Image 1 (cartoon, rainbow, N blue to C red):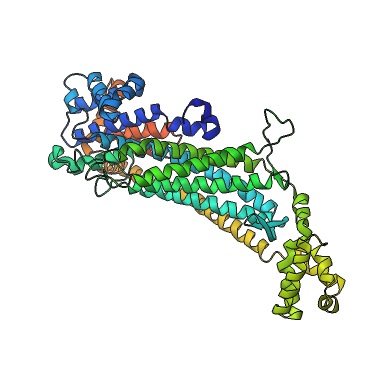
Image 2: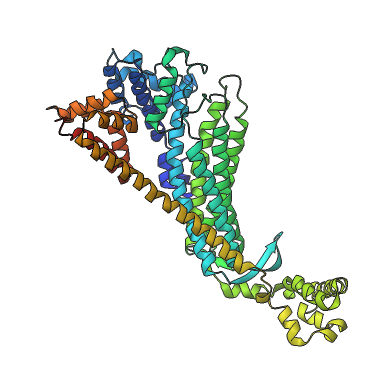
Length: 546
């Protein structure tokens, strides 16, 4: 965003915070701390140095503006950050800061953390927007309105059918982003040119440990110059923004004074014209969607990376991806606001079917006449009648009634029935039902995943409790395997737990299990909190251990 003046209109407050400079700084420090921990576990960094590095990796201790200014000299903010971090740790720990990593490793991994959290926010808003579309589809399943193609009236449809299209567009966009979140968010660690040479034989172990500690995927190869996952993120965001923007555009068109079929619940005014009731939420959503599409062009262009590390293409991604997240969040949030408060004028929709002399029913007339008069004759008659109506001569019903072949074949009631919009809706109602059923099925599937996960956690906890009756070592081995810690780290944690200065020692050591527990609590993921506590207590409370 060019300034805070536009943030409220073009993104959501939560997304602005999740992609802020402060969030980037915190994410880079999180990666540096996790790297030190992973290298300590691999025997490359002394434990005391790793503890000191992690303790120093607090965003509030660093001058973000100064780091940004110094980044100009090195073309990325990691270089000045590493310098500042080395000054913040004891002298004996400084050589181990950023060991074996390159700037892109830190920044790309931080970007993945930012993307993970931003996607969680966006998926929540997409779910809310889809729910709003589903309510409209169900409520207006049989509300008749003109269908429009190439901005001209075509045949009758229902507003429920239109809203069903909105709904499935948002569901598809959400599914695409959820899939990217699960499959394509990966840690970056390749070292100077992708060989991990400076980490020796421990390079792969460190990469695996870093991925595990950050909760990111471990790719088979670094992706310094293979940027498809970034382009895929940009594409998924642009599609989601575009799907929301399509809804917003429809709302703007339907809210035009000459159409008047919908209006926003809280329209905006004008500084000059007191009568204006502008669809401001849809307008802002459309602006965001256009901006998100523009960012994709930058990300696609950055696929062309020189050799092992890009010169310029990498830097171009940072702002583009942040803007893509912010603008997509704005498009979705503002469209959701428009949909949730949408006022639908069913009477106006019905009356608009009579515009242009009822020519919207020309296809229906052709279909009905063809049954009795044959296709060729029916088409000749309807085209002739439609031409006269188009020139301002009455309505389609009147023009058809003047045709001798029609008058001889159809009664007045039969002709009126053939031109009744409610009788020419095809499978509109059934299609709405299918869309709503597909949406409901997806929601049920998403909800059914949670009990299975809970059952798995419960089974594990029961197995741990059973192990209390025997030698505690299997419990500790199980605990190590399920938390990503080594056996020694688990035992160390237990010793500290029962030491007289246990609280202070825990705060200083802060092993991975505790970090996960803190993160789960902050995220209010109470299921994970409970599972971690059970795992820890099961091993620590063993009577054999005590």
